[in-house]
Image (cartoon, rainbow over all chains, first blue to last red; front, side, top):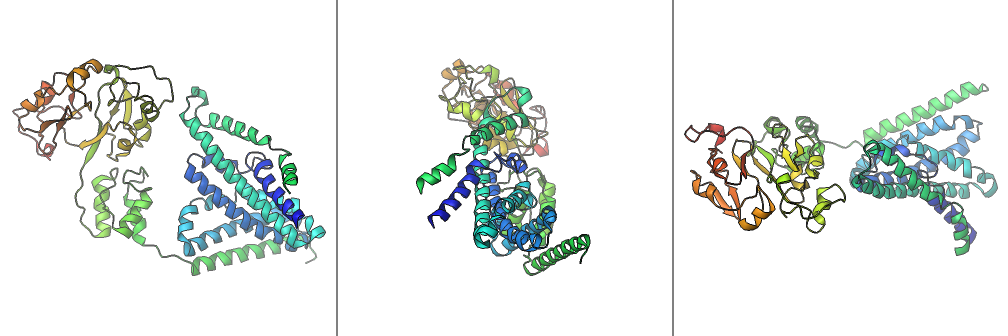
Length: 213
Length: 279
């Protein structure tokens, strides 16, 4: 059991820190640059991404194992995942609007934005790539749980990156850079430096978790 | 089914159909009734999403009008036209609609002294927070233009170190009044009445040392106003716009040139007061 916890904790924290989707794998850069101007909108976007990533992975992972792999249709992964995630996000939006209006008001604006966002598709595909092989070895349940933890970690990592970068950006807004750097150039430079700081986590998490348990 | 291409097409088509069906059913069974008037009212508003009405945006304000009965005259950029068309939709009276424009109640800028050299963040809010601000006058315009960036209509600019409102572009949305850390942006009726461009509460002798164009509370304007519309409050002249008829006596009498016409010229003292100038 302890080994299981260690596995899941390692996956979770390495997705948040070491393999951070935005800052290390460079997926989902468009919302990262577009919605990070204000703290409340970046938090809203981050939470929406967590929800969508987990639900999307929960649907696409079994679909890959039981529908695509079982019928040798692995090459259709991308197109089918896009289709399924698009339908899913629309469905979540309609359901939230009907049953949980408060949550809809908080996430509503951001849900359509991430319908076919690359980081959502990325986590669905990479979860299959990384943990699809574990189905044969450890059984479907365990591999599925691994994929879900991976998706949650990716979402939390996205939220972390958004909030951190929002803070960086509010400092940059008040600074007085040279005329040619104003606007997007200085934003990209500061994004690069923020990303650089996350490179320092490489190889750290596995050893920490191993030491803790 | 042996042909992989046919199989792939069939699987994708079925998945697409299933997804479409689910969405159609979901939107049918989980439809939320929305008052159609919300969309109509939104269409009447200016659509600038300036937030001057105090709501999160035009759609939010429209929702508040329809659902919570919010007052309908708050859309300053839309003006009377918007209020009238909303009144037609909601079947209500338009009510009071003050037509106000912003003005900067300071004309210091380069006329105002400097207490220290400020080289920090180029923002009024930040500068005002450093030891009471770099300007000699603790009430005057800092000139970094927080109001300029708050204005969605390009009506504000900083000229000679002091913010100036272009009242032909101003829509009266009041966004700038919240942005100024010193509360210098005030609303004033559209009518061509003069305005006191100073907020310095210090006594006259102190003001003279700080600013070439500060109100020294001499009271000449109070004594000379034919309408008794001017009074002194906290060592600054104030104009009661319900009494002012825009004659301009105070503008010519003020020894420090603090009282200015904001738009339109002065009307002659003898000339009859135009109808629109009286509020």
